[in-house]
Amino acid sequence: MRSLFLKIFLWFWGAMVLIGLTVFLVVTTTLPDPLPQPWRESTGAVLAAYATAAATAWEAGDRTSVDLYLREREFKSHARLQLFDDADHALSEGREPRWRRRSPDGSARADETPERRQWGGPWSFGRPQELPSSAKWQSLRQRALRSDEAVFELAGPRVLAAQSVKIQSGRRYVIQAVLPWPRFGRPAADPRAQWLGVLVVLGVSGLVCYGLVRYLTAPMLSLRAATQRLAAGDLAARTGAAQRRRRDEVADLGRDFDSMAERIQALVMTQRQLLGDISHELRSPLARLTMALALARRHVAQGTSVEETNAALDRIKRETGRLNELIEQLLQLTRLESGEVRTDPDPVELEQLVREVVTDADFEARESNRAVQVTQTQPCQVTGSGDLLRSAVENVVRNAVRYTSPGSTVEVSLLCRNEGLNKTNTAIISVRDHGEGVPEETLNDLFRPFYRVADARDRESGGVGLGLAITERAVRSHGGTVSAQNVPDGGLLVELRLPVTQPNNP
Image (cartoon, rainbow, N blue to C red; front, side, top):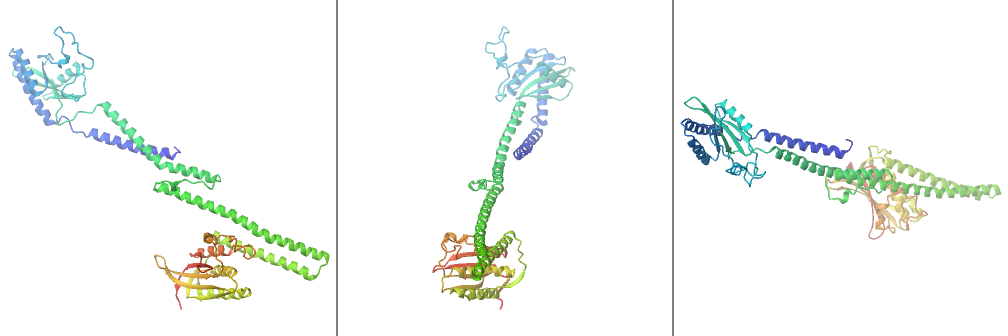
């Protein structure tokens, strides 16, 4: 019973079988009486009248008139009648169906067959029955002699009846009758038909439950197979639920698994690429550091001038600084990715923060014939980490200074607007450069660690490719978003959106 399919199947099938048997028992135990009491009383009275008349004729010695009387009653009532005395002797002719009658010499008729030996007739409802045995008739007559009321017994599509009477002479007589089934009743179901119905219920319910359980468990089996493949290292394992038209909770589970698998695959691939990029980024400064160290040693060994030795040592210092910066950015990115950086709910004045970042960036940009200025600001206050938000804005501004054209100005603005369906107050920090921009298909990749656009962001002119990635994680940890788009007249526009706590404060 470890199979969910088997458990669900047995539970559903058992429930349907139980319901079917319950309905069957309720119907069979609450069927209306096929021979209601008023019919029994009226039929018993008629049979008593027939018996009294026939018995009186018998005691008068007119035996022929007994048979004629009973045949006449049979014709009018569509019944078969026969008279017996209290010693159980037949006093009238007992008629059989015409195909059961013997030839004049007493032999069986030539057209009599095993099928015709069965008892049919206008009330057989197409189901021939065997004639009641003599013992059965005798038992019925004995019961009638011991009772003052008519005795009835069902026999397939007919009713067997016996009624005893006591005439003026003091003797008792019994009349037996084969009656057609009353029109207001219905024939009792044959036991074989009843069991056949039960088997049909079991079979149909079994098929329905099998189809239902199969429908429920098929996606689970597919999900199990995909899970096993994913656990074995196949990152492309999918259930295929997205390609099916099924719409229910089980299908949603399969689609959620596929989304999870896609996310895991993307994370693993990103992790692998990240490890490769880190290795490459570390290899270059380490190689230069090794070369500078070798040169310094050579200069010391050869007694070279102090200036050349100091130049090698300065090179070692620069490469060590780059390594330190790279490691610090990697640690910060790792902390942001893992959620270890706490964004304390401190109020941060964005207007002051933006102006300070722009002032510092403009001072550095003037050395390369570039400038940074604030084009528009509004008082906005957000909640979070001031240092983290400063680093996020600073990375975007420094990136814009690096790639804007010489002699151009990087434009920075801060606006507070109501955005979205709920009209949420949002601070929008826009940073626009006047460089060459980036290809449209690479806009979403700008915030990926170590990503560079080949023709504009190579390793000689750019940093290590972690600044924008840190910005995106920092803004996201504050409940905001970062986006980038090319400006039609040239340059790249990066927007940082943050939820505002106190907009437009003077």
